[in-house]
Structure formats: C-alpha cells, structure tokens
Image (cartoon, rainbow, N blue to C red; front, side):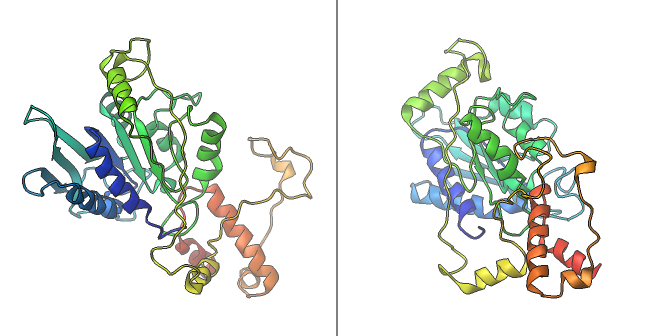
Length: 332
C-alpha cells in the first residue's frame, strides 16, 4: 500500500551505503520530482552519521534533460522546469586522497546510455516507484539480457507498490517479481515488492570491488572480473505513515477508487487453455462484452463487484494507472 515510507527508507539506506564505502551510486525514478523524499531522508541520514552540510557535501540541483520525453512522463508535465536534486557528492571518509568523492546521482530511466553507464560505473542502483516504469526499461536497468540472464555486477534496490494510486500498475509483481522469485534473484538482479535492501557486509564489498577491478579474473561481470551471483531479498513495509493503523478513511478511499489489488483468480468457466500458459489466449477463446456505463456506475452490489474486477484487470495489464482512468470511464 502507499504511504508506508518506502522512499524514506531508501533514503536512509543510501546514507548507510555511503557509510559502508559505496562510491558510485545511481538513483532513478519515472520523474526526478518523485525523488524529493528519498534525497531528503538521504541527507538527514548523513547528518545523523556526522557528515557536515558545508564541509562534506556538495548538492547539485537543476532541471534534468529529457524530462517529459519518451515513454515515461510524456505529456504529464512531471518535473518540467522544476529545480530538483540531481547529484550529491560526499567527501569519502578514511581516504588519504582528499579529492576522493562518493557520488549519488540521478539517472533518467529511459536514457539511451543508462545501461552502458551502469555496467561500467555503478556499484549500486536504486529504483524508486518502479511499477510506473515500463518492464522493458526495468529489464535494461537491471542489466538483463533477452534470455533473462543478468550481465550486470552492481547491487539493485527496487522500491514500489503493487497497489494504490499516483500512476502505478501491477505488471511489476505479476511479471518481473514472479520471474525473479522463480530464479532466486540470479536472473535479473535483486529487487523487491515494497523495498529491497542488500547486504552491506565488508566481505561482500571487498569481493565486489575486486570483481569490478578485475582481480577476480574468472571471466564475465563488470570490469572484467567475476560476476557475483545476486540474491533476491524482499521487505514489505506495512505500518501506515499517512494514516493511523486501521483508519477507515484509507479503506474507504481504496474502495471508492477501486484500488484493492488481490490477485485475479482464473475463471473456472474457461477450460480450453491452461492457466499456467504465459502466452495470451487465441481470440476465439475470448469474450467481448458491451458494458452499459449507467449500469456499471449504478452502485448495485453486482455492478460494483464487476467494476472492481474490471479495474483490477486493467491495472494488472498496464504499467501506468491513476484514478483519472476511472473518472474517464464514468464521464464517457
């Protein structure tokens, strides 16, 4: 559900990553304006760890190139002409080189150079609001090949919600996460339904650095070294931040906007195709219905149940949804 503190958790975790020596960190989201909370809590975390705003940090703000272009954010004006945090540069502690910096910077998810940049430079990639990013772009960010195998050697934290509003969909959980769970995370990279945090152990960091520098020359992976296997770890944040626990307003809002997203059960009336098939059914096995709008929004219990199922199917089929879609149906 929304309002559970996923972005804030990622921001605090990023400050821990800096404290554990990660130097090249990239952050992405459908729009840079979505990352305000993440960067806010990242800076708060650094302050709690003793970093000084003036002596240790450089914060770069601006308007990123390409905002509102391509399949993400097109036409919605998100982030246009808005000054946002694009990069935070941190003085590396414990280094004899005063010029050594640890950098956290924004990377547009639909950038043509994103995959090459991540493969050659990234130690950690953070993806916030991942459900609003098309799955092919997510696969590229995760470094997966056409066969589903990962050629990347950086850690990935992926945060999103599989229900709610603000333009999210459920393709993430129905397609990407199910594939990750089947492969144990080794196929596409570490990710999570609500928030994923990888291990910060010193041993793993030493192995990763050796791999990226080529010291583990067993072939493959970033920097010519051995590609370390990825492990899938999932964390779910369930305690509400925007509401009190069990607040009826939240339940009412979800029902009003048709937001509940329990997995759709396959119809028992259709037995021609296997429910385990990943390919779409033949058109001859499908039914086309003409739905009366007035009946659909008549508040009858049967029509309400049909509307909920219809919206559930819609959000399961498309990567970007919002309550505006329900309003368009009602006003059609």
